[in-house]
Length: 209
Image (cartoon, rainbow, N blue to C red; front, side, top):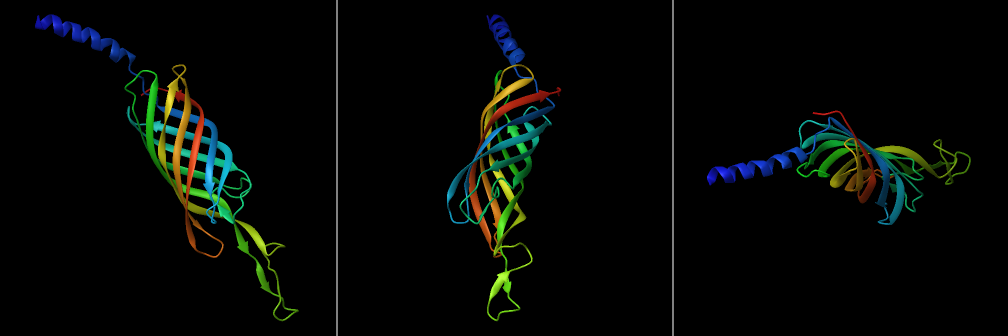
């Protein structure tokens, strides 16, 4: 009786093992990205853009990810992590953990660190040599406020879900990240911004481990 039960258990487990996912060597994601961004005045704005990432898998569950994204739109404040009019983008790197225990779904979580290349407004007023006490635009630009590029520390914490279409093509219906940026403003102070980034797109799985 025991041997019969053992045989049944083995026959039941073998199909499950055959259904287990293969682990690709690389996974390339590209798609649409939405950013709910805050600025230095605690205002919130909606921005649209793109997200591109590359994951190198070192085991069934562990990988290292490189992620870049950019978002576009004019913001009402002095400075935002993604810049004004899309003049900035993020470049983030870090570990990712995936669960491949079911045939057609792969949930994952990750923590990324890097920077955000953005733009900020800098005051550009200097003393007028021809009029005592008067101020005129300085050498940075022709206005009293100038837009300058700036690189700030950033991190992202989040995860998502991949759904199988074929062995090599998967769909990522959602990927959500909490994005935190340490931003140096025009007067030299550091402001912390907390944003929400949501992306969706297609995943290409390349090679096998």
